[in-house]
Image 1: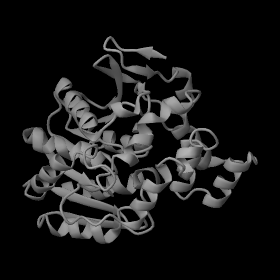
Image 2 (image 1 turned 90 degrees about the vertical axis):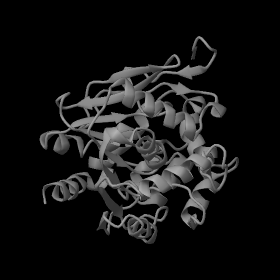
Image 3 (image 1 turned 180 degrees about the vertical axis):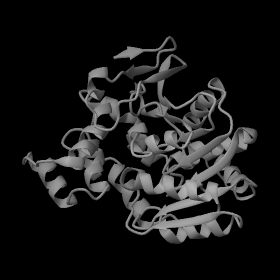
Length: 330
């Protein structure tokens, strides 16, 4: 374990953990923030329009591996950051260090440090609150928004039963709080979250030490989402564990609710092109919510991927890119 000059304890994922990941051979780049390394992917011409690819929990830039090649081929510079605590970024071990405002500030530093302009931003999950806030902060840098299965807190927002159950699994004594990473890894979790394995089989194998064979894309998913936390133990997953506890329904302060309300109003009033691309099988951010948000931005478009669940970039990446490019070219 290391500490910053101001005494913040953190762990660093070994580079070896990221070797041999399928479809993800991108060179790492780092920005130092308060003595911590924040990792990001930077692919494509530096003078090209930017695709800023925002992830949530428990993912990282690996989530966009099926989208980056198509976006680069279409002429974009793809910048995909890993929040601190995720991916190849450093892992602060103190849970109290993490909150939505801090993650948002870190993304602002990345955007300004790289002087990103003409940005098409793709957001999903916690990428929504941390990413869409940048539009209100720096509106002149953005040219288009692609909003996928996410939200911004505001008065009257109805938190689904799926969200409430998600929080319950992460409070002390909850299934995931107790078993990640002791018995269950994020890679295993993501194999059934992306509907590539039977959830019952994965959980049963994890809880009983019964071997489960992963093959093909399931193996790639398991390896990719486990890689950031290999060998780090419980201290290394403080970041992912904090995001569920920062949902405004559970913790308004950590969820940055006042700023999220302002961001929601600002996004709804934007003149920027807005393309909603929604996974129709998501139990957390359901289709009805996506359609309602779309209705609040009259010039926006709404495309539904009926069989896509919450992590639609992982399962429907090329389709998402095709949809967005179709709206740009027509």
